[in-house]
Image (cartoon, rainbow, N blue to C red):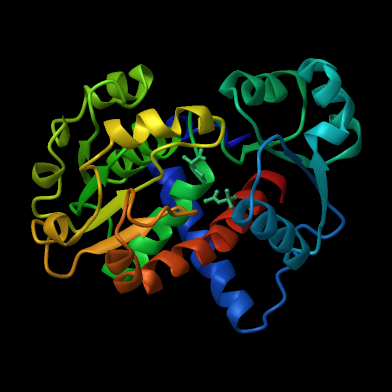
Length: 300
Ligand code: CP
Ligand code: NVA
């Protein structure tokens, strides 16, 4: 494993290895055991979009591993004034030991990896959010003690989160049921990937998707960059909400996860959110542990 560009690039074994290492690093951090695996290493963190969790968890994680994180806002870099990503990659490779990037186009992340010669980590694109899904799988495994054979349900936009969750959950042996409105389906490359899996279903009926679910996921109806479509999307996504009605279709002990930020009363009711707040905030914490594992694997 040279980079983390998308879930599709990881084998099932690599996913499990990352989760196991994350468990170990979490234990070490909780027990005050030094784990300076990246002593003297530097991580550049390029942000073209807002972030709370990704920025703070990578920055803190790098510090805890003995390394140094550099926050690089794209609009203060030459890349924000049009310097090609191919050149940015070759320059930053001479200074840094790794780059985490949050941007719009997946191609930009792929190009960084192609032109640079240091590990590249995708911190979210319009296409996918692999770091989040590793943290999500870590959280599900903590609560359920397994992944293989669990029923997962995703309700909402076929966006970056849906794309990564579908691939990640199928790779670790979960049964995946997705409900999206027509016109808002997951990416074609992801739907092509699911063709090899008989345990994947895509429907426009949220209640049906939630039947027997062990874990339910949702995400915002309008992602970063889609602000101008918010009104249109509010209409298209009506009914694609995790609420008591949906929860009554799921297993009695089903978990609910959300990558955050959440829009209460849109994709999830405030009631369901608060009933599952422990799971959701454990999930947010696990960004730290999962990403530390990714950095150690790639840069250690
Ligand atoms: N879930 C997530 O990536 O959060 P941020 O946008 O705050 O980084
Ligand atoms: N789908 C959301 C996820 C945020 C972490 C977005 O892209 O804005």
